[in-house]
Length: 137
Length: 274
Image 1 (tube, rainbow over the protein chains, first blue to last red):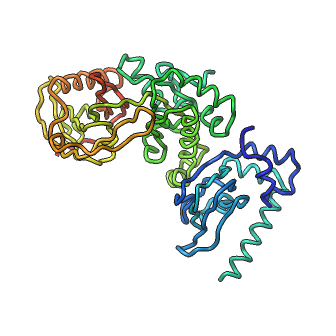
Image 2 (cartoon, rainbow over the protein chains, first blue to last red):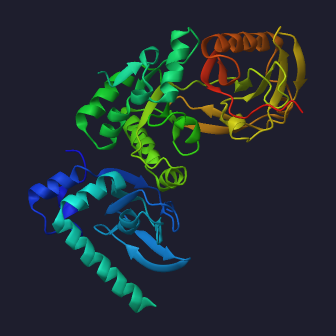
Image 3 (tube, chains in turn purple, red):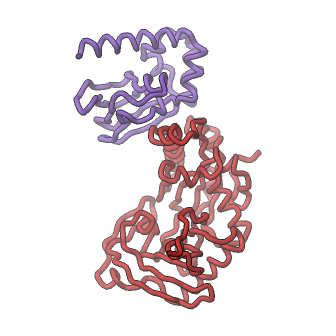
């Protein structure tokens, strides 16, 4: 079956409340992408092309050169630049061989526009990130 | 509509991309190309999506090609985009198994959808959904390879300017050696032979991949092309100009005694007669 496995998708809070059929529809839009250990996955300041969901491996998040956290299987990143078409807000570096599923801007935008449940989950996720960022200041 | 065609059947930029159609023009014009096929943007996307049927179709189509292979991107979405995106879209050399071809197509697809490619698109006003075709060709293991301008792009003179080095031409294109430089008059007379400094060659490995090789001292400053080979390159320049028009930027390779055309583009750097 093409795309991301539904089981991987359903581990992501953003997609957790979707029906199995909705999750299957969305899973098909994802494409697999692998990164080598040490490879820069996204770079702070760059334009954003895709939203990524980690299938296996670990990645490090840095902002302005400072470590801000580690990402593990089931974590996702890259949605903010896709929403506002702005620059990436953090650098993500693969700490091990990293297998991701990516959803590009061209598929992500209609997906969110057409699916209120995903839109709502996304807002909750962004609100949490905002709180975390304010607490981190 | 066929999604995979032999190079001589690649005619539509909007389906196969400008590089594939350029090679199609060469094949139809009888120019010597390594054997290969053109893949449409649609089938590349289907393979990147993991669609089993598309993966099997591609594997079957590339099976007759001699290994290893070169997998080259061929942008399909805008006029002249392949030249503009030359630094963004990917070429993979030394691809061998069907699984590696699938992975290479996925990487090429992602190269057109990478952050750097999207940034470039945003800045250049080309912010539309990218589509990338692919050319899969037999990767030669050349004795000598390089580039040739059918008109001198530096002086603007009506002469061929050739840069050449040992092994794959990537070392010339990437500026990793100081290549030998030759100038040939349109009549075929060799005007200049200038030895370079070529400490390194990149070779194709039979089972896939490439390897760097340090060259023995006697080959570093030794000219890598003889006069009969220069005459053959001059004839290739003539034939390319007949097919494409004047002012061409050619990538070529000499393998097992035969000269091959790898790529032929319009010269993008204007010559100055200064």
